[in-house]
Length: 402
Ligand code: SF4
Image (cartoon, rainbow, N blue to C red):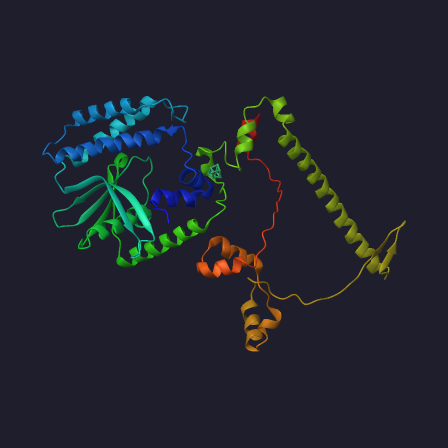
């Protein structure tokens, strides 16, 4: 089984296809968002600050800022992308300096705890057999005077999350497990997020129950990832920033035609087919509505004339009237009661059937025992199928094409 990190799990949750392209196929984006570039440089500067302390050296703010400017220039590369058109790289660089100043003012002379490690690697297993392996890097692990371990995470984000979000955060929750595995005698572990822009720390602790629930949910997610063979793309608002627009099956056509001049765009074979399909579907909808109206009139005609067969030119229409009992559906009121009566009478097997759609869902999610799933799979036959669904483009997508 692969080794998992919180970032991997999050990317899978966001979009299984993106996860596959990045982690399984190892297709790395050739651009770097400036927000990530900025975050990395600020993290490196704060790392230096605490690494120097190990040699009893307290960095001055000027020294730290000079270091930051230096690594900014040394690491800069042409593929760093500034998406906001109203901002430049210099704005981001200045923002990084401001974040470092705020952190420095709030924490110098950095003597409230003892640093155990910076960018500290934590590799550990969620279970005793070593099946569910995890990997993570703690920005800074420290020990407070009362012996409490503090897992420190620096955040350069422009948003401050709620305490509730911090209490449910998976990443530092997993690091908690990693620290506990490395130092089994650690009595207290505190999770601390330093929101640099807000000069605020969010602090959270985990109960043993919360940790065991986290282990279970993470193992479940890893099982789902391991059983996935399709890695379906999951479209969401975050597609806008996805680096795989040109190869993702959900977006590659839009990506391919988005720069075409209008005339070429309108004659591109895919565009032609979709336009024709949409036209025909609208026509089919109009015809269906017309058919429904005529059907209603035929029923009225049959009722009013007490006739069951109505003749036309070369065709006839038969109208039948019948009554049947409608029972409550799966989620309707009275369904449980009805099922209870039938089960109680010992007649359930005579009227129940296997829900093969539900079975397909179970196989896809892989939540049952593997040997049972394998046995069930033997009875399935692989069928190729396709579906075509028409939907409206969003306003912004239309704008892009004009
Ligand atoms: S474009 Fe959207 S659906 Fe496609 S891989 Fe990226 S995030 Fe997933």
